[in-house]
Image (cartoon, rainbow, N blue to C red; front, side, top):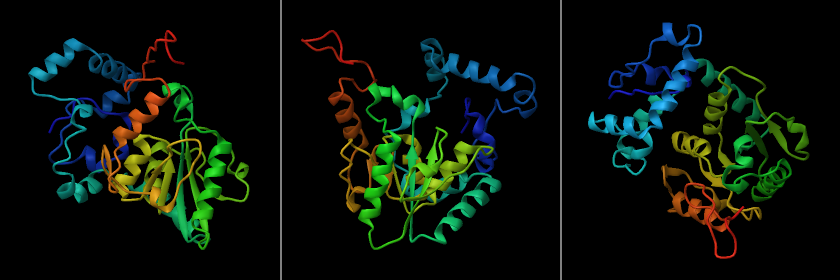
Length: 273
C-alpha cells in the first residue's frame, strides 16, 4: 500500500511509518524538517486533495481517499490486533500515558476520559456539538452518580486551556503543554475505563483502538445511563447496534443543517441559523 498524503504526526507512529507493507513515497525527513518544508507540504496536500481534476487523476491511477473507504469494515475483526500494533504511538508517548493512568488509579476504581472539544466546535454545525465547561461539569457529576459505589476520577482531554480546578467535587487530571500533546491525549483516552465526549472521530478512535466503552453526548439534557456507553465497532457503528450516521443526521437536521453542514432552507426563512 502506498500513502501519498499524511499528517505531520506520522512520526508519532513509528510502527506505521516503518510498516513493511505500507509505503510513504513522499516521506523525506531531510526535506520536511528543512526550512518551511512541512508548511509547503501541508499547502500542497490541501490543494491537491481538494481539487476535482486531481481527484480524477488519482482515481485513474488507482488511488482512493481514506474518507471514501469509511463504509468498508470487512476485515476489521481479523486485523484488529495488527491495527493496534501499527497505530501504537512511540514509546515516550505510551510511557507518559500509562504513567498518568497509573497515577489516577491510585485513588480511583474507574477512570473516565472526558473529551472536551472546543475551538472549531463552537461554530461547527451551528454549535450543536459544543458543550460549555459548566455542562461538562454536570456531566461528570452525573457519571459519579452512575457509579456511586465506585471511586470515579476523570482524565481531561481538551483543545482549550483551563485549570481542572473549575470542576469542583470531581477528581480531575490532565497534561500540561507536552510535545505531541494531541496524540498523548488520544492514547491516554484509549487507556481509560470509559470515555465521554461530543460526536467526534477523536474520541471514537480512542474507543475503537483501545476497546473502551464510549458515550457520545446526544443532547444538552445529558440523560445518560450505564448502557449509554458502548465500544465503537467501526466508523459508523457501536457494538450495541447504534449508528453514528443516524445520530449525526438527527442532530444536524434538528438544528437546521444537512449532512454537509449547510443551512437548510425552509418555507418560512431563507436559511436556518
